[in-house]
Image 1: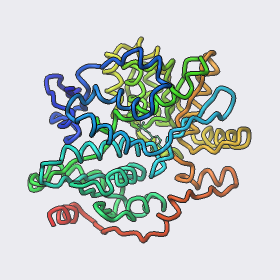
Image 2: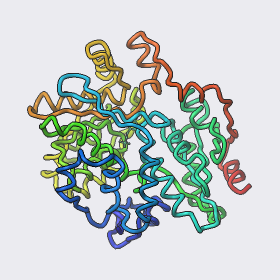
Image 3: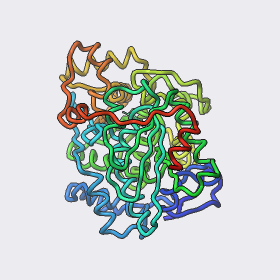
Length: 429
Ligand SMILES: *Cc1c(COP(=O)(O)O)cnc(C)c1O
């Protein structure tokens, strides 16, 4: 499969090159040259296939022969080393729990898949690849864990000192091995600026520097997998699925929409957002006007210019009518989010995190106006990652899962840096 730049369709490259470079030379996002079609026989008999088989069917056409099938199978098996259960929270409404991975967030799927692809592509290349990421919290943990122990790859993570939660800091700093955490005396924006600077620095050109952000095709596309798993689990109910995705950069929902385009029969998608509502406003007015970003309880979705939205427009050939048929989008504020967390816990005995709660609200809004669907909302992070707001609202203490408990006892290891020069000195060591 070839991938073209959304800024200039004549710039084309392979899956490998798109995964290694992340973004096209003209700064465009990469997009597959054609949308493959899965056989209807496979879709009709999906319950007969294992999750690994399903994922392989979905992803293989996007990679072609760039990774041999047996190696791709290993990559998929390692990516899917945890469960993706659908849990009924009320009549006809299911939570698709995506937080059973090593860092308790759905980003584990993309990070694990991408790391193993890069590992394969770096073989035979005796230069080490250095992944450089800035994180405000969740991304860094998933990337660090996804790349932990992967040969030929070093990971350098920049995070703002004192601005990530205790759990998140441990997920970045306690791993050791090929993961190095740089604790920046500054904000997340400072971290991001340093990373951007490094990618443009001629004196670092001899180092294989790569990013691992969510626009990378190798992180974006494997997110299709769990939409197939939800369909497999809920197909027997006999109704079309309405799937609500708590959205920030819109990579996750864009993977769901791609899954539908290649043949997965999903009835409707709902992009649920917090008050950073650029897309809900677009779906009303057809005007794309990013505002300033507002901090919320669902902070992984505090994004006002979602980078993957251009991919969604491409998928629908910028035809607003057909986009509207498949996608609705609604925003919710923190008061509504806390009310939903409370309602789910006290009425339905279900503990949701603020992101999942936003997803639930969007699903309810759609289903109130549209009958005949089985509803699914994506629970994108474990509630223990956002304990303060939940514990305060519900008056409970969230038990810490075993996997996390042991990590919390490991000593933090981070190198303190202040400026771009410090980062550069470290990279040139
Ligand atoms: C990253 C993230 C999101 C948003 O996903 P996008 O693909 O950026 O839309 C939602 N919930 C959680 C917990 C996240 O970490």
